[in-house]
Length: 87
Image (cartoon, rainbow, N blue to C red; front, side, top):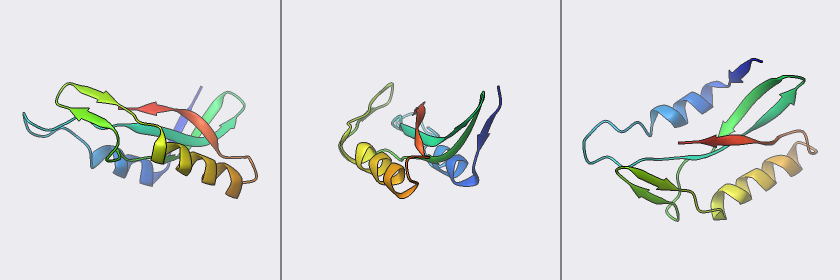
């Protein structure tokens, strides 16, 4: 199984690295394509103001993440789908 991350996905990850002792955790959902055994991750949602973010805790609220996923799914004709979570 191979997993490919588009460039924008890495940028989301990198922008939420905990660099200081008081930095909070971040997370979101991963959207993309399933190609046989392989995954192509095309989008990672960024943390929202509704998510619970602490130094050693992250809980994703569904609100904005769900809207982004639904829009991506509709605009792709059902080809882009939920493939996982990150945090």
